[in-house]
Length: 319
Image (cartoon, rainbow, N blue to C red):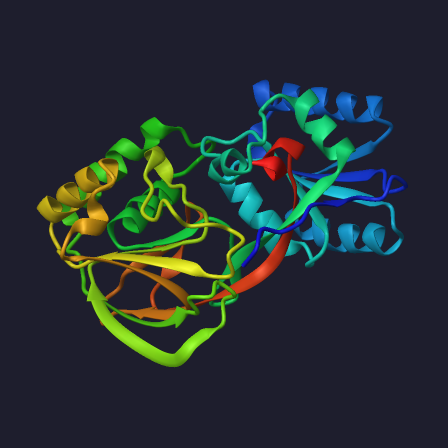
């Protein structure tokens, strides 16, 4: 698939809806939101904070039909971005204002953290199309993790009582190391076409077993890990990365090889471009979408090419 061409938002679209994370409170994040609203005003744009996720979709639809909606802004981390893309209709421009602990999608899109810079990018209004994955009806922009990493995320969210910092992961990691049993997963996948248009290559399904599984749309993961460094979010396909060993030793071995960018050379690592797949297990195996605990297998996944309209810096388009 050739890179998506940028588009421009019409100048008369001057309304900006901002979905915020209520846990931002009255601290630094709240102060940055105030600066952001002031910066939008200087660009003759009108910003409106929306704290209830159920309101963002209907309000965005109404303004979009009237030709007045410039952007829906996800003001938070990757969790807020995931909530935004799942509540906004296709074709509505989305911008990211990174305020969270993890901002993987924002970093991939080269979105700055300074409110004034984000406001300027929205005012310029350069948009591109990006793919989204669909995991049993829920969209994701970055990736899926199944197995040990998802168990850690699940434990973090069970104990969550406010803003999550990286230190909050230490106990869940330790608890998961002590108790996780690395159940086997069965993964059936349909290869994406080698021509890069996301079409099925012959319609044949392949089945493999794994103890760790990742489905990648954007080549970014926490801690800077890159399971499929060559992945692109506008190529009409997802990328599957699996590991078949099932123990803490195997997990540490795989982690070291991923850090060294050597994991794809391992005989028990499989990387494939896929259009759709099914992941299941006879035992409970958790999965996470874009860093949020989302349930237990089974999971049916497929690609939705060009599903997302994202506002990006002009420099990102040139890159």
